[in-house]
Image (cartoon, rainbow, N blue to C red; front, side, top):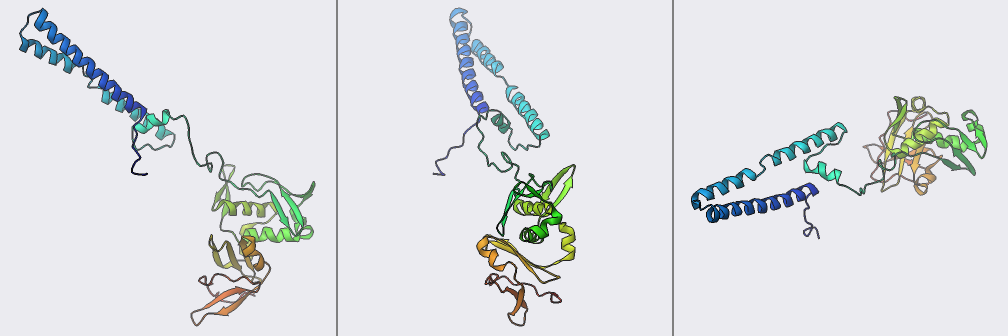
Length: 286
């Protein structure tokens, strides 16, 4: 099937090819008519009228047309470059101008490649999250009643713990630039980090209070990510519910794997993959 695919030409090149064929036929017809008229009607020598016909044919060829077309396409490339579009081939500029249907991925084209947490279901509570994008603007609410960040730990402790886990088990970062919040990292982690900010947490201060000792990076094969933090030796998992839920709220314990070092194992029925080894911290967590 791939071998049967033919390389097409642009509309401009097709029109130029048609114009070239038509112009060639017209020039040949005019030169032939001039030769016949000179020999038959004017009784001119055949060699002399032949040279005149050839001269007419050569003079009628538009030699500057390719240069003019190249200059016009180069101007189009320059205008596209001013709009941050790099064109490798000159005819592609004309092709873009002839496009009637564009099929593209919706991410970044029809959408903004942003994710936002809109609702949290935790411990029997349904918490609505207002706001859009990565800006930490918007309140938490249970129904029509607002849930201030200061009351989150007392009224919805499970949601507060979830927001803390979203801030700790996260590799993304948010920063404000020119009045807009910019994300550096995965959109999913950015949405969770925004949730933590709306819950009144400061991820930078939280990272200082409970520094990360080690991490199991997220992989689609295992469907979870986990981080180990100091202070209380807690393990924070994040990922698919079937993989991360058994590990939530448990404390890590050491299991030796020989003289080379140790690994961390959860007492909740979930073990990290056998090929994942935690680096032994210099001092055990308090």
